[in-house]
Image (cartoon, rainbow, N blue to C red):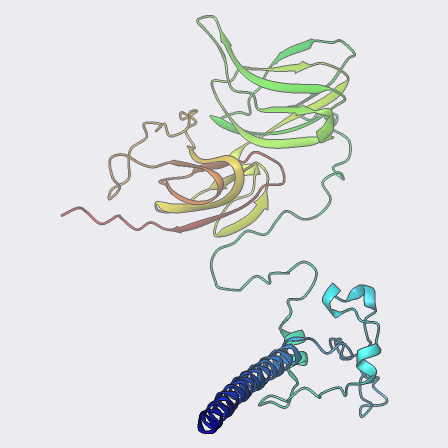
Length: 376
């Protein structure tokens, strides 16, 4: 029986020791796992802290402003950068300054040229204000805009004593006034140039007419102006079939029409620049090309033969075609906006240019005639 008691006691001690060992082993395993988890957490926290330090802006370093100019008398004086206020900074850059007192300001690393990254970023910023584009002198044809005052034309001219082929008058206060008068032509002039000047407080228009026993025709108006234009004028061509002029007005105004022969006007011999409607004489010894460079919303240029038998655009007069020219001649051109056109001047006559406004610029040039290559 004593042996049985001893055996039972020994078994109890073994069981108790086993239980205690198992409990100690479990506690050690738990401590090891806790230590490992703590180490992992510490490493993650350190990684996040390092990332936060790299991503977060340094609040004590403000963006570098452009350097102030150095006075000429102190070339060695460094420029002082002004620090922007908190209101000028983005929201993420605003700080109360508590963190900056405990942290040193890291100096920006210089790049290859010795400039800081912040300074390079400032230089790369686009300039403020409108961008001015400087025209490039590429040798291409361009027109110069009309210059000079347009309101210094003076009063509408009146005929001098004994002056012929000059007509003028005044419009009354009638709402709808109309005045028609016959035109006296210069001797032996199948075509004339009319210089027209008008001024009105409302509206005025001058139209050419053909009035004969067997024909009555109203042609396109030569000029129409309103009070907003002030005094304005135009130079145009009248052919022999025009027998009368008609002035229509809707209020007080003045008008003047003076006729010139082709021998009395300027001649185009090479190139010429100007603005507004004009008529020039051409007297080439051989056929030439006329190059018209015009900038206007709607414009036309044409050759008018000295015979005066071509009143319509693109219509040939019937005079003999010089040798070496094609059977169908291009005697006129037109365009919208800025355009460059070429047409033929086969013989002596007039060049009539009609842009939309008195300020529209143009350039005319005569060049030697070069036949177009024949089709194979």
